[in-house]
Length: 289
Image 1: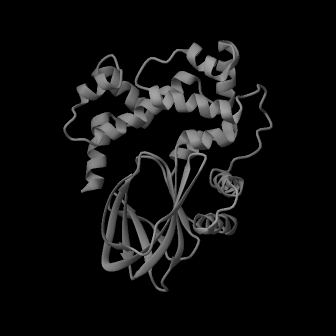
Image 2 (image 1 turned 45 degrees about the horizontal axis):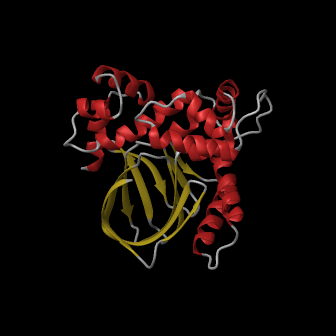
């Protein structure tokens, strides 16, 4: 995650755990009167206010407009990938919060086609839900637990919180069998690592030990997308990291990422992100200033 902070000081040690691709960080910080921060992440993130001093609030803004005010314990905000936010402490002297970082692949591995992937791109602010707050507090507690409980405990808490966050319902209409969780993890990790190159359907099918036809249907049943679309999204996520570097021009990025030319790169990027690479880069740089 790209961040620039001023006036925040970490108290004690950072507590963190990882459960199947979801990173949980518990931060405790003190704040000055002018404490601020700029944040932009290539992956989705859930912010949860666990504890703060009475009368204090942590305010989130986007493009100069206030969008959320966290002044109550257990409130949370979901920030999609690439969405720039400005954080500001108002009357805040201390705050303890939980951050959950996860990729689209990590969420899809859990829920498959039952997940409405559009929700991953939708900002949700100042969520105030008793069940979700309890789950978030339990995840934070497990991050500090020593010795830690079995990974299935923390993973179950994370699964439950994400199911509520994205309103994942039982997929009663599923007709085709999908990939197992292990097969899907193996295949999506391979795509992520090799997304700039040419990936043949046969390679992926072989990893899953299935025929190409069966694999193609099973992958779409699990993710809601064909393998080539999944690869393109992985490619664009890595491209976004390159765009944050000023010394790399668009034509160089297009070549590095395996696109035929800059025009092809621009069309593909806009098809996934909704902005041209140049527009996205300008917005990301504004958020970092």
